[in-house]
Every structure is written in structure tokens, then in C-alpha cells.
Image (tube, rainbow, N blue to C red):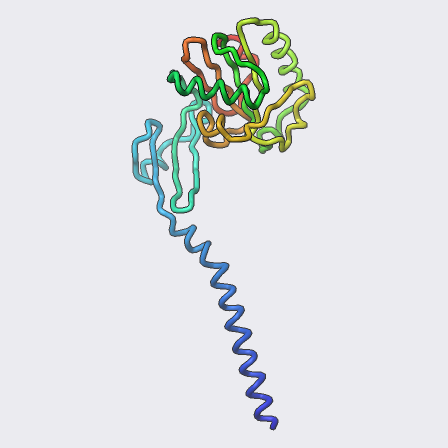
Length: 219
């Protein structure tokens, strides 16, 4: 009888251990998959390069960011210029205006210069910024920009996380469909970014922390 009890206990122990091993491997599998994801490297012009060549690119945050993005199947390493110039097609302009009309509940006038200040969400850059100083600059900016008839200015955010950093006088609109993010700011750039769209459909983008009053010199 004692022997049978011992055997039963041993069998139960083995079953329990197998169960925990099964759970362990289930938890371990995603990590293994993550580590096995294929890596792709691109230079500042979008050309595919080797990992060795990518690592040779020196950090220069004044001109570009080295960005790492992770998808379900790959790790993608890119180099992005902080300043970007281009021109919107008629279709792209119409879609942008329609979207701005929707989220701002206003009628956007594309014959004017359109400014979008984009907030990507709370980050270390925001956390280490001087709140009073930043808001004093925004106050000056708002006073100046609101006095210029040919300009329409928008404050758009990816989320409201940490938005209380800014003064309540700034009226943020949520990028609810992530249209602005996906078309102009596809990655998280520290502290925010801005876009200036001119009446001739040419645009200027600056990614990452910026001095907001510099916008006044570009319109």
C-alpha cells in the first residue's frame, strides 16, 4: 500500500512538472522568435546596407536620427533626416484638408499656410524640459501666429498622455486615425515635430525637439 501511494505521488509530480515545463516553453517561444527576427539596415538615402556599415554611421542628432523599428517579422534600422522638404500631390492635399476638417471641426483654407505642431506622447525629452520656459515660448508663438491672417495653425497629438505639461490655452486635437503620424511622422521623435505646408503645396518638416519660435521665420 505504501508503495502504491509513493507511485501515485511520483506520477502526480511528473505530471505537474510537465505542465510547468509546457508553460515555460510557451513563455520562452516569443522571446526566441524575437531574437530570430531578420534585421534590415538602411542608410540616410533609404539604400540597404550591412549591419557593419550601419554601425559606422556616427550619431549626429542635429542632422538625423538613427531609428530602430520592430515588426512581427523583422527589426528595421534606419537613418532619418531631421529636416525634410517635399511637395504634396493634389490628392494628398485634399485628404489632409479633409482630415483636418474632421478632427478640428473647422473649415481648413488650403490657400493659406498650414502649420501642424505634432506631439507624439510623453517621453524623456518632455520630462526633462523646463515647463515654464517652454510655455512662455508657446505663449509668444500663439500671440504672433494668431495675428497672421494668411496662416492656420493646429496642435495635434498622438495621445493626451502628458499633455498637461502644456498650458491649457493650447487646444490639442487628437490624431484619432493616426493619419498625421503615418504620413508625416512615422516614428516617435523626442519632444515633438512640426510641419509647414505652403499654399503652393510645398512642405517643410522638422522632426524632433525644436524651438517653436523658429517657425515664425519660415512662413
